[in-house]
Amino acid sequence: MNIDIITVVPDLLESPFSHSIMKRAREKGLLTVNTYNLRKWAINKHMQVDDYQFGGGAGMVMMPEPLANAIDELQKDKKYDEIIFMTPDGKSFNQQTANRLSMKENLLIICGHYKGIDERIRQKYVTMEISIGDYVLSGGELAAAVVVDAIGRLIPGVLGDETSALFDSFQDNLLAPPVYTRPADFRGDKVPPVLIQGDPKKVEEWRHEQSLLRTKERRPDLLEGD
Ligand code: 6GU
Image (tube, rainbow, N blue to C red; front, side):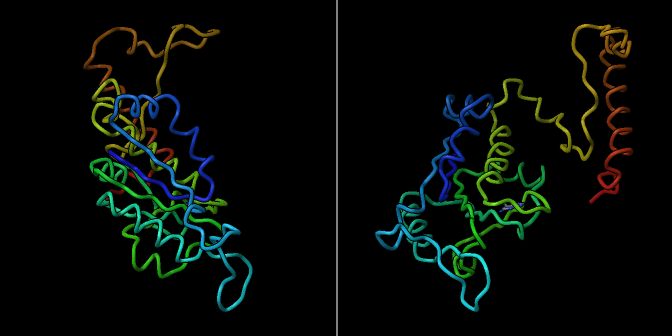
């Protein structure tokens, strides 16, 4: 999978994909992430990419020309499956959307800043608008990093154990069960015996029970179905 990201702060997107699972995905050639600095398409020598909003009001808006020129140029080489705009008024991101996007070949992500981007770019180019939750970030970059991470780990071959993403929280609308590692007795707190006794069927039953219990307690909304 290839993910291109347009941003005014490319530095913010360096580290998130250079460690751990994302690093492995890139090294294995399963994921490429390219960031493009929007200022490369700035309209003047002041490197301007934003301007005051028509109608007045506080906050700058990202101008249409730099974005359109950037997208046009990138689209010469690639056919994007989705052009995603990161915005707090987008559709709430969840595991189902991550699953769906992980099957795409080519994605373009646009990170907004300031008051957002000119509406005409949203109308003309953007095919999908994503928010990562009901709070406002100062830019779309951290949200884009969240989305790329959630998608990237689902690409077949990225996780060492091919099945492990299947057991993540949310994959079946259930939260993941508690997990334990050594020591079996930590300062008097013991690991549940069923996990140590070695009956795989009992372990699976216990995990499922715990998943249900956790979901009922913490996220009853997930059990109401969709
Ligand atoms: Cl995608 N962008 C910004 N700026 N804030 C957000 C967001 C995105 N999702 C939640 N808050």
